[in-house]
Image 1: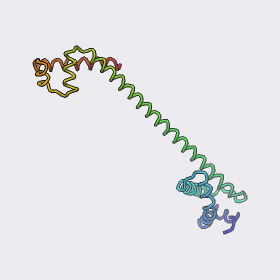
Image 2 (image 1 turned 180 degrees about the horizontal axis):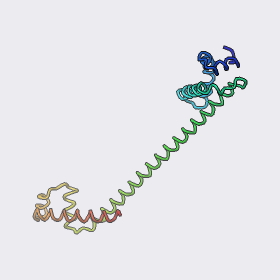
Image 3 (image 1 turned 90 degrees about the vertical axis):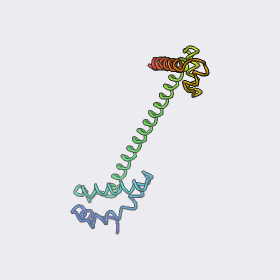
Image 4 (image 1 turned 60 degrees about the vertical axis):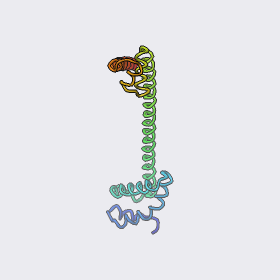
Amino acid sequence: MDYPNEHLLRKVIDGDQSAFGDLYTFYRTPALKFCYSLLKDEEEAESMLQEVFLKIWSRRRSIRPELNFSSYLFTCLRNMAFDELKKMEKNNLLKKRYLESMEAARDDDKEEKEVIISALYTAVDSLSEKRKTILQLNIDEGKSYQEIAESLKISKNTVKNQLVKAKQILREKVDYATL
């Protein structure tokens, strides 16, 4: 097919689907190359070409055959490509902001954990030696109430009471430190 002429464009305007197919066939390859040169994505270029030709078909009555159709088509493609690039840039910016906020949240969590750990060490240091020893035997060494009672020569009930009080003090001091 030769360069699309005014006669072909008038047929398209009148709704001739065959003429529209000829128009599409003529411009498909150069238009795809143009879109790809802007977007660097074959699927996106193909999609954009389809979308522009659908718009041309739906607005065919506004085509002015005496004007340069080629210029019109490539201007439409360029504008659509630029709009798409702006969307992609905006999406990338949103992703970047999201990742930055997630990183900041992780940093905040890390700082919060450090505050809790520091408060916990301070709270453990504030316990009496007897409570601290019972707590360490239970938590660090995993000993049962009975084993602690036997090694310290105290009753199992005393071990239980001292652990309950120690844990209560720790909870209160850590809660207070994290306010």
